Length: 159
Image 1 (cartoon, rainbow, N blue to C red):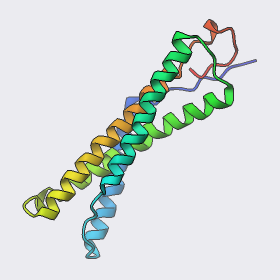
Image 2 (cartoon, rainbow, N blue to C red):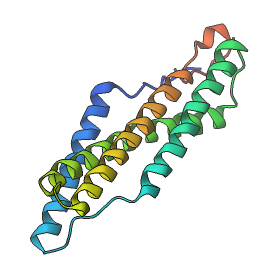
Image 3 (cartoon, rainbow, N blue to C red):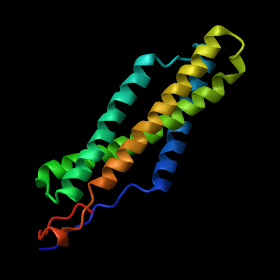
C-alpha cells in the first residue's frame, strides 16, 4: 500500500493568496467607484466572525497537538481528512481576505478626514487583522495535524 503525503500550505502560497485577494478587491472597488457606488464598510460582524472561527482553529491546533503528539492517538481517516481540508481552506481563504481588506484600507485612507472614511479604514483594518488570525490559525492547526506514521504503526500519513 502506498501512502500519499499531503503537503502543508507554504508561506509563498499564502502570500500569493494575499495578492489574489488584493487584486480582486481592487478591481471590485474600482468598478464600484466607476459606477458611482459608495465604498463598502465591512461590518463588525465580519471581524467577529473571523475571530470566532480563528479561535476555533487555534483551539483545534492545541487539541490536535494533545491528541496526535502528546497522547499519540491516530485520527479516523475521514475525520483527519476533513480537519486537514478545513485548515487548508481557512489558511488560504483567510490570506485572500487579508489582501482584500488591506486594499480597502489603502483605498479609503484619503477619506480619513471624514467620520465615514475613518469608520471604513478602522473596520477594514480590524477585518484584515482578524483575517490574519484566521489564516495563521489554519496554518498552525494544519501543522499540528501532521504526524509521523512510523511512530504509530499505520500506513496512514496526513503529513
